[in-house]
Length: 158
Image (cartoon, rainbow, N blue to C red; front, side, top):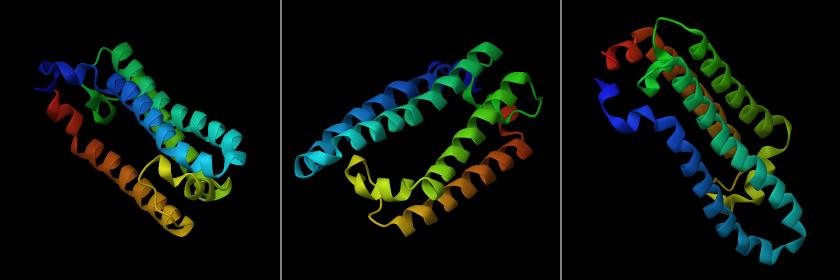
């Protein structure tokens, strides 16, 4: 069903240039803040490098696993017949979810996001960032498990 739609074959790979464009746009938006606080430039560059990696690497890996596994659609992650590329995709997803949680809560990531909130639509409060991080991770894991349990990937690839 979905494998006949051309864009789905490359959906994960399309996330890479979209993520890169998002980082470039964030860098542009951050330039005004850096004019006000030039002493933050080095920290901002390190932040943007991490932001770039976080916005592109997971998409590239998920696309690579889809291609290597011979799957025609991006929903291979939640198919019920488990293969090595699905397991690698799960490890990738959980690793990046864990890193986001760890960064926000244990590496002063919430404080840094508030500092550089012009990068995107980031809440201006550390507490709100932490609450939204917990909610986002909960919803993502719940949706992932629900889609797997219901066999969404199997249904959509028929």
